[in-house]
Amino acid sequence: MSLLWMDCDADFERLIDVACEYEVRARGDYFDKKGEETRKIFYRDMRYNITFLYTSYLLQDGKIMEDYARWLFRLMAPILKDLSPKETADYLYVHLDAIRDGIRTVFSGKAQAQLLELIDRAGDKVALESSLPPAQPQASVHYEEEVQRYLHLLFQKNTRQLPLLIQEFVNRGIPLTDLYVEILAESMRRIGELWHTGQISVATEHYCTSATLTVMSQLYSIIFAQKRKHRSVLCACPGTELHELGARMIADLFENDGWDTIYLGAAVPEKALFDAIRTQQPDLVALSVTMPQHLIVCQELTTALRAAFPDIRIAVGGHAFHSTQAIWSKWPIDIYTEDARELLEKANEALDNPT
Image (tube, rainbow, N blue to C red; front, side, top):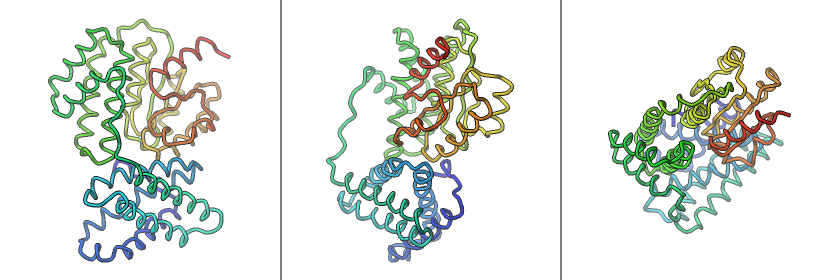
């Protein structure tokens, strides 16, 4: 979770400490038997969890906290495999109650009321998850066979066969946009879900990401051979967002469509982004956010971009937005899309039909 670390303001930093104190008291017997390393892990996880509360509160979007609670239940269920769903929920209620008590200690007035409401919504989501039947297998997609073959090689860590499989898909005539969105992106979405629910290790998730970036690079002889459109897009992940696969896919699909791409990658500081825009003058700036905690920086960045470059087109997207109530609709942006293929379509439409 260290990759997802973020700083909160002073009150929330205090909330982390206070909530930890309350939970240690509530689970006294457990912590009395554990050493310092366990307490450090516990503090780390409490901080991580409260960043979701912080994000949900600042952005005034309760769905962020609800989706966090859903994820937390699904993460803990296999870890607490000897407990029933109700017992797992009861275990999480202790954690949520510690945060609730911390909120009452640290905050007052309107802020306290809003934060307590978010915790209540999280508790309601935990209760709902504990009452649902076991998750059913995912519905198949158009390229389900191809996705399954790709995932099989990833889990086998068969790095040598992966490029051959991708070349087979290309030789069969699968469009590059389909290959990226419906096979590679769909496979990585499932990998992310497995990691989020504790079914694969972070090492496996990192390998799958690295291997996918590698097989994408073998397609560059096709991608960079396309006729140029004399349009350019700048792609970046704002703040401390380290998940760059989505942004890389955007850049590749735009390059394949004839755009020139300025790919800045992960965790791009605001000044570096602004300097690149002034120097390169792209037609479109595309920001990709995977983890909800980075939506705060993304929101601030889109506002600053609009003020500094009023005529530039701004697009946002990424998995983080799925945990919001269309929060992007309140931002000063031009395009929001679910995937890179749709973004390319909307970007071309916007430039072909300028208002």
